[in-house]
Amino acid sequence: MEIGVGRGGVLEAYFWGQDSDVETNYARYRETLAIVQEGLSHDELTYQGQFYNFDRLPMRLRPIQQPHPPFWYMRNVETAAIDGMNTIIVGSLDSFEANVRRYRELWAQHHGPEFRTAHGTAPKIGLVHHMVLAETDAEALELARPAWEHYKWNLSAPRRLEAEKRGLNQFLVPNERMRPKAAPEREARRDLYWSLTERTEEEKQARQTPGGLGGDGQGAGFSVVAGTPDSARRYMDEYLKTGANYFVCSFQWGSLTHDHALRSLELFATEVMPQYGEAQAASKR
Image (cartoon, rainbow, N blue to C red; front, top):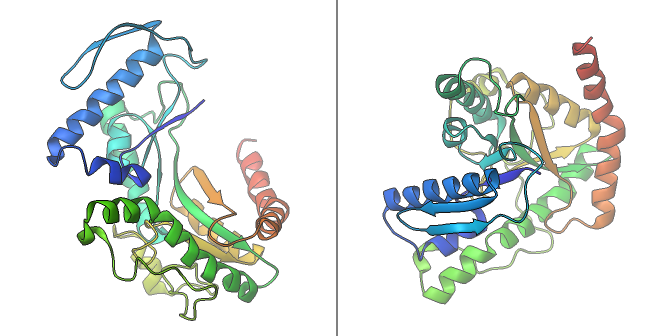
């Protein structure tokens, strides 16, 4: 079992009703984390804090991993590294390599140079991807464009509904109330979809500099990889150069059908994964 700890995503709307002070919210996070770690490590939970109090609360379920399961913190490499957690972030390769370096630097600073968790494993860092694979690049992009519009609409629903209920229109971006068309006519932006051609030297240099999230600013920074298996392999080669050791991908999202997802999965499993499985086996010999 692995546990992810985060302060974003769909819970964001809920926290509008919490303390407006950032330091208070952070203190609440620290206390909540301490409670979870304490409870998972003992048969009973006793805790007296600023926000929560527990007295000999029985912990009915004990984790197999000791002292507790691996923890994950999403979207913030600094908090993840300082607190000794694995991490998954969002964005594009343009900023990812700098985040991997920062994560490793802070891990070494706070936990030693061995780069190992309390369970003796290398801490994991990866990037979230939404993937569409097809026999041609054009077909993959044709599927990805409208699916991404629908995905963004669905992703923003908790924030949108909560903002509308409370009359907090300042949290609504323009056109957020409008449902996407079945087939958007606008062209896919280069920073949203992985380029199906080789990147320029200028773009390769940009990867070395910390920057903002990829995407168009409305999809929570998630990246999309759309193309043939050959395009996906070129992307994976670039991904490995960042120093990342974890890969997260989603194959069914937005308006993609189950058949679309199964086809992408089949192409990924048969034409992309074997290459990297063989490379990993060779590196261990």
